[in-house]
Length: 115
Image 1 (tube, rainbow, N blue to C red):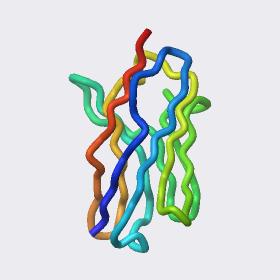
Image 2: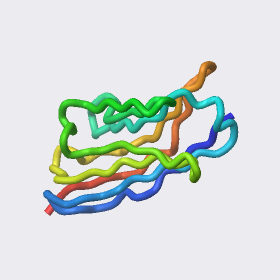
Image 3: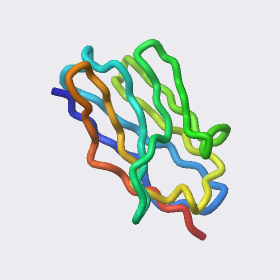
Image 4: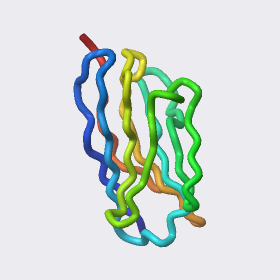
């Protein structure tokens, strides 16, 4: 079992920055990749960025150059640094952990970009 707890969401003005954190606990060694997804009202959940066990990263075209995913192994925490935020980035952001058996999800954290 893997438990994921997100933090760092909130209200920010367009052009601003936020950093989301996802702290993992439990069977940490079973995690093969971690990622951030988001879901806006009326839309499907979509991948934002992902980091593999080896440290390889990829991100959606819509956030490339603005968002950065990183990991602190000592703290078992994955981060999503979000810069130059736009109103269309408004969504609930979910942390995801992939193991050989199943995916795990956090409870989600709301990010609202508005003036």
